[in-house]
Image 1 (cartoon, rainbow, N blue to C red):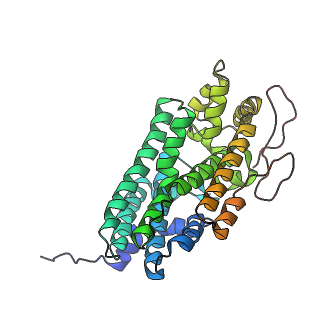
Image 2 (image 1 turned 180 degrees about the vertical axis):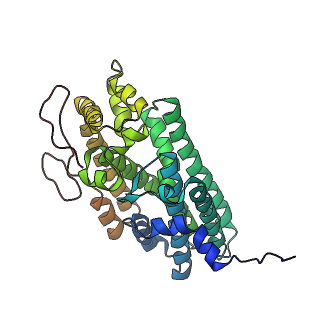
Image 3 (image 1 turned 90 degrees about the horizontal axis):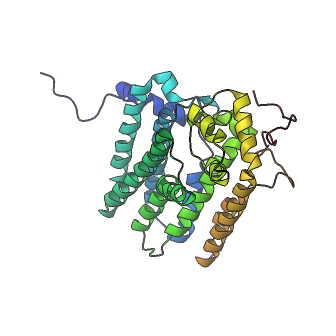
Length: 326
């Protein structure tokens, strides 16, 4: 009888990890890596341990994208077909779960007992946040804004909070950066929700108004539904998970009518201001300030740039519709 070896065959390993390596071959903007390096100006983790933490966070983030795309039935990720459409759902799920544990094995290279408890706590938060978002979607339950923010703190802020807590465990720094991390996470998620419905570049990378097709209760959709509770049009459209561009255009026009995108820009400006104020309270960090400022959303009535081109801007009843991205 052949006894299995402890370490896998490299050829089989490559096959098992193919969905992961596929998505890694088309990297994003590496925003989390930039944030980790910016926080390290304060925390001062030795470079060898910082490299491990960076790798662990990147592995967890990329693996979570594989699962997110399955749960959302997405078609595109960063302008390319999603992994599960190429490799199949079972292999992609197994790959993502495998990478979670490979990340834990990588983290064990740092001989620090605090690391495992931090890893466990934040992975639980990530899955709790993701679970709440799925529950709202699948039960067609519109959360309050406060419930949405709590979910974002679990889900979107989770990986950065994990990184910062791991960094602190690897250093002598005692400062509490949780509020700073959560402000960045909230701003980032509202921005992402906003761009999903307003940016033509986002449409090219992820799909045209993909949050509507997913039936997702994103920040703009929550605001619009609660701003006009007498109308069920938007909720009924969301329930259908539309794929037709014309119906999506109409849904966004309903959100324009409730001044939802203006509200989103106001909230983004508020959280950006709070984040910059927190940076100053913590002693200043030019690199982090630059990252936060780079995420700022311009007022479309004042300026535009190549990263933000409004998809459309019409209200119900208007015949002046701009072209839908192809």
